[in-house]
Length: 99
Image 1: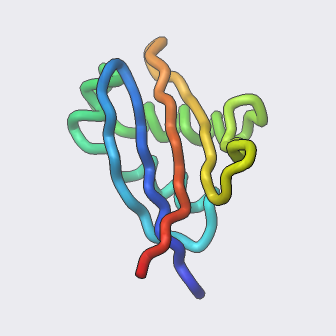
Image 2: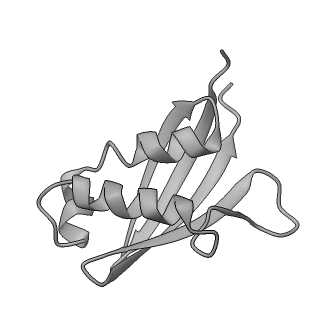
C-alpha cells in the first residue's frame, strides 16, 4: 500500500509546530499525527498527556464544521481546528511530495 507524506503545521497559543507523517490517507494521517504530540505541544495546550489532544482531534474529525476542509483553489491542502482547555489549535495539513 502506498503511503503519502503529510506535513502538519499547527498554530496554537502563539507558537507554530511542524511535523510530518507517512500514511495512506488524510484521515489516518491526522490520527497518526495526534499520536505523536511532543512536550512543547502539550505545554501549549496546558495538558500533561497527549490523550486529551487526541480526543479533541478525533472529535474534530467527526464535526464537518471543524474539518478537515479542503482550501478553495488549492490542491492537497486542508485546514481544521480543535480546542483543548479552551485553547484552540489551528492545523494546516499539506499532502507533500515525498521524493
